[in-house]
Length: 150
Ligand code: HEC
Image: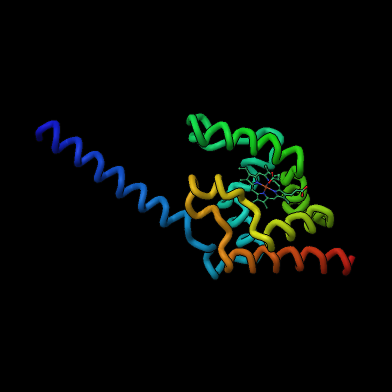
């Protein structure tokens, strides 16, 4: 194979794998999952813990010029605003989830401000769709009614 055709074959394979990856990450969680698992899948998929974490695990493009600096700055601001590992840990341990955190999450999910726009363009599928928003809000309501029962 000539160098030129190898080059184009490389581009083709690269493009195909990108398209496949984007399709996989852009899907709402399966209908069959339990509400809790759907919630978890959306939170993981939307990169919430990537930024709102004491030790942010940033994607590789955080090292890129241009966008990278922006993401790093966002991640350090994010943690100072809210540490989402706390409510997620409470939930995983079966404890009551802090109602202050629930209110904050409800707010950003309802007004569509999270994840930040600059993050969603580099990570297709991370934006919260209408369907995903409904699932998150239902989960938040469920956590609140649990608090009332106990
Ligand atoms: C790229 C990093 C990043 C990602 C990803 C991200 N956030 Fe944020 N978040 C921020 C920043 C930065 C702020 C501070 C407000 C601002 O500057 O917009 C913030 C603010 C918030 C707040 C408001 C805290 C307050 O005190 O009012 C909540 C709640 C929140 N984010 C939840 C989420 C959830 C839920 C997700 C996932 C769906 C998410 N964030 C994804 C960076 C991020």
